[in-house]
Length: 80
Length: 393
Image (cartoon, rainbow over all chains, first blue to last red; front, side, top):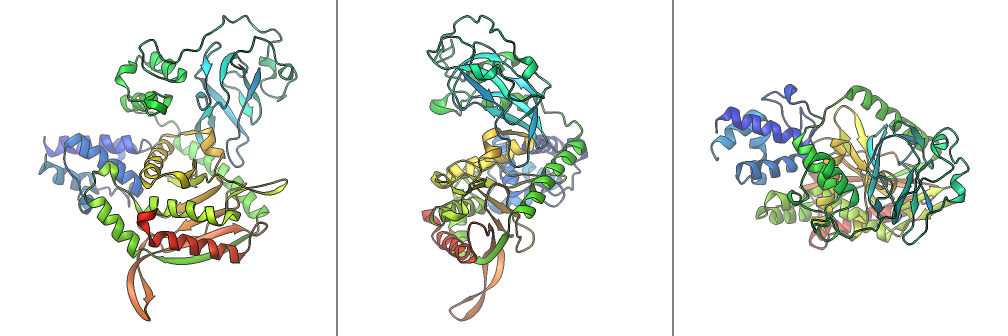
């Protein structure tokens, strides 16, 4: 998977967790909590979805690595 | 025969517009089934039924604005013969529903409720109907109901996943929600003499226990500090009963059950506080699951009528980043709200030394008609004690 494909998949899962987000308006540098107003429960729901989709273990210590679409794409690309 | 009426939709929500019927005459219904969807200021709310029986007739029509208490349908109890109930002939809610009531019941073929779908897969009638409408095979679904039965939420979850819901006029929706919040909060501040007590709780034990517990768990089994706080609030409410219940015309009525409302902030300025029923009886895992489910459904605008009206106490947390404390406004007819600032390192005094430790500042806002500061202090002290033994939560 390319980073672009991963970024698209990440945004798909993100919008599933928070259906009130508009995927067209999510920038690669948007921070889940600071910009997109997700709470810790949403972040956990996203981690669950990403772990399943990519078959990658995401430890609590790794949460900062998936905090934006760009960061997540880079992080996941190394692991899938 | 029983008249199934529009249930309460929560504080200061007086009406809802019927947008969907999920049952039709002849369908068997059971306690807890979702039978209709109404649109309210706080989004779409799924209306649950609390009787067992068979739908005799749908009284309310799609598009009608229905006040709380308006007749929605007539339900025939199991074993009962078809007969028009006497009290539905008189219009219950003059401006809504009355015209829709026909004086003569249409003949309905007798329906024998079946325990399971013809496929042998247990599913609620509403779930079966919705699955059929959407062309989803019951075999493809995982049931989350009693005994693994497929319930409507399971079907809706799959339907939603397949088809991202549109976001019509979100601004207008949030403006309406803001009006509902304004009405409930203004009423609260007008009627309820609030008092406040605040206490900072050392979270060292809870933080360490949580990290150790989560370390070897897959994400779907991980706990959040919010779940520990919720459980501790529910357990403390068991000890100090004057924070848990409803205040009505006859004064305060404490509740034996602890239905803990969870405040969930929505993007753009919305706020809902649906209830987790019997929160004190749930394990941390169950509580966490319930919080996760509630958060997702709140975001999707799909909460249930019981969740909107049954909370006996509310908990609201700022989340993991933010300021250190927040004081809340009680949601009527409740008599207390517990709020948490962001947990983080704070200077605490331990053994005469100032140390930096993980801590959270909790505030109780309570109704002075029901309790006093001394009780509030005991409540927060009990809550503190619960959080010092996280393994027992």
